[in-house]
Amino acid sequence: MGKYRLDYFSKYYFYEEDKFSQEVEDGEFILEQIKKSNRFDYKGHSYKYTKFGNISKRNTQRDVEVEIQKDNIDVIINGENAHLDLIYKFETKDLEDHIRITTRISEKNDDISCILYIDYNQGNDFVKELEDVKRVQQEYMNISNKK
Image 1 (cartoon, rainbow, N blue to C red):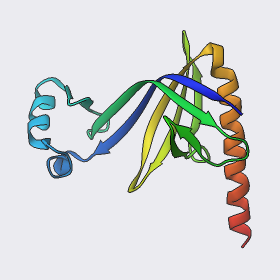
Image 2 (image 1 turned 30 degrees about the vertical axis):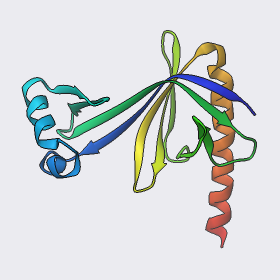
Image 3 (image 1 turned 180 degrees about the vertical axis):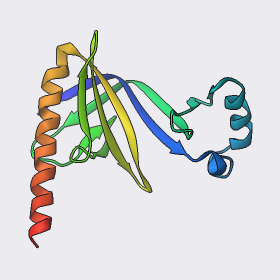
Image 4 (image 1 turned 120 degrees about the horizontal axis):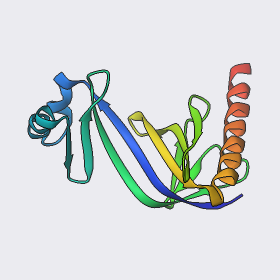
């Protein structure tokens, strides 16, 4: 399987407005700022209102290395094991100069929405390998359901 370099890797965390101040460091200050302009960039994150009235926190990294290993349900992102929930969400869209992949990533206490942007030079191979990861995840799911 292969190693790929994503141009961008973004994670999205979502919060109810009434709980935001308690759940996010400096939440009260951030909330004041996004009420003024609907968006606020702070300490490496972008905060804004969603179309559903919640608040999203986006964390975007550039030049992210992803390694995909054969017959593995996980991938390696910047040297760390990660589980992309490809069974539940795996959408691709061809953009002008990138392929955008939308999925979810499992973190210790939550499943987080994420978007991966990869250039066309490596994008089609990357998507095919993600499809293989999804297939392996589905195989494990089917084994679990038969027990």
